Length: 221
Length: 221
DNA sequence: GTCAATATTTTTGTATACAATACGGCTTGT
DNA sequence: ACAAGCCGTATTGTATACAAAAATATTGAC
Image 1 (cartoon, chains in turn yellow, purple, blue, orange):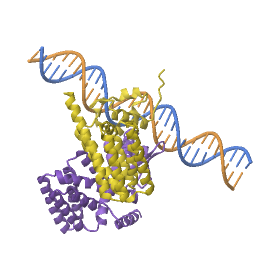
Image 2 (cartoon, chains in turn purple, cyan, green, brown):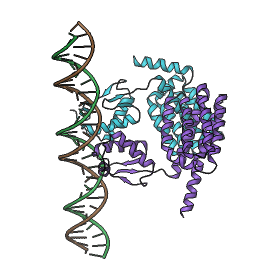
Image 3 (tube, chains in turn purple, brown, yellow, green):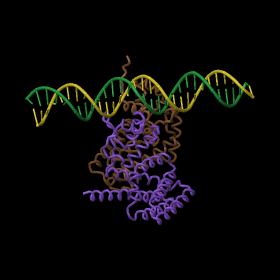
Image 4 (spheres, chains in turn red, green, orange, brown):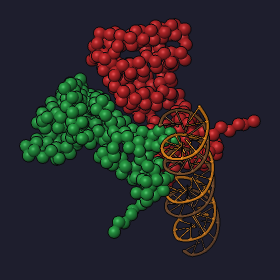
């Protein structure tokens, strides 16, 4: 028996968001309001609110009087987003280098230690989690709540692609050692070094992803 | 006679946005849906859509089942936003240093020349316009459309405070000379220097913060 | 048979009606 | 008199009804 649970509009929004991020829809596909309303067993009103939220966060494009269409970022846009992610995280690292607490430094060390163990066990799933924790500690230690928020926002948006990219061979171990360099720079309070290391650490993900896309394209032909 | 012109929801949104940015509402004031619907002579539906857009861009806070409340950023948050703005613009400059076209370099020089004339004439209003043009050229020359968009978004949000910032910095002339240093760095393709110069140019630092707090307090009275 | 103009249908956008929840005043008990 | 609980009212959230516009189908002319 299919029990239908009514959801609030913000729940619908994040659910739709997840569906788009997980590529449940094709690029350019139109999201039909009545269809979605039917699926979530609510009226069109909360669906429209949800869709507008998605439109503003850039996941879908809303063309007036035409409808909303899912908008999967292309390879170029993804690269651009990773580049910005690198800059934002570099900014976090730069500020954190001066502002980070001893407590947080210890936490970073612990997280890295756990990462190490996880790498040894080749447990990619756990690695994602620990990796995310590592980065988020640094966002927070930037001491800039607005920056933290903006960085988290983009991080969330890139999340599905990040996983894809970490799967590449040898990347886990390299990523680990980069983490350690970053912690060292933060410990020394070397803002420029921390920023530079972080920028490269993140930018590499974009490049790797680019390679991945390229190889997929070649494979598709 | 007061002719009432019906507006579309997105027009309402940007109109409300302007009203909030221009501080037509007090901080914490509740925006009444029916009242706004009445003022714009539309139903609550487009008003709600507009308010949700504002909520997502952070201009108002939406508390479920309570309503939306205007949320004027305090001194600390404002400082944080300027810090992020500095980082984003620094990123633009960093990338532009490598990617900028000769054509754009020339345009920057021209804009600076016009700035110079405007400074001589002490025409602050014109200066804002030329200053904005200068910065936007660099956003574009980052060659990263996503970065350009994000930077423009924050720039727009900080716009009303920008003149405040320029006044804080004391001197139009100082700002001018910083522009010239930036152009030099860009011409030399010195990414690090360009980024550093831009960051300092935009950010509100040190004792300037106290001035900011003071002037905000004065403005509030 | 094809192209164009028009009618029909679908779909978005807005208004209104209804439901659910939070706030404020009122009553009542101690 | 004061506090706590309850009821009425105001306000948000959702559903439905309606209007406007775009997409599609149909019909007619060449």
